[in-house]
Image (cartoon, rainbow, N blue to C red):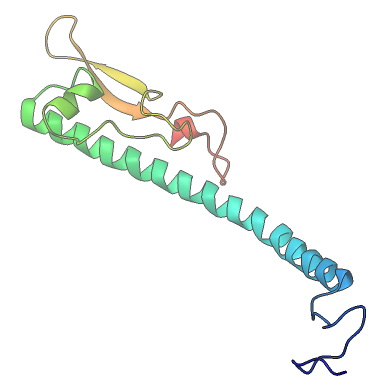
Length: 138
């Protein structure tokens, strides 16, 4: 008696096509090799991007400090004053420390007695950039 759907009868009525374990292991080895080659480059690109963002944030903030001084004749008492008076939308972000609170402020004597203002800012991040300069010196 023949089966009605045309398949042979037996222990395994239909053979399922699938990948063998060896084929899967070869594919996993190739994927692992490609990942191990690309991950170090990815982290280099991320580090370089963070350094560029830091340099740009410092440049913009220093420019804003100069504009504030040109407009008012005094240096701002804090970075928050630049935000309050709408010179900046928000406090600058230091991508190396991942914070906006780690800036090192360089103070200058103000025009009045005992009044100091922010003349410059520096990054509070430890370490050096890819060219060997300390983040503090950027």
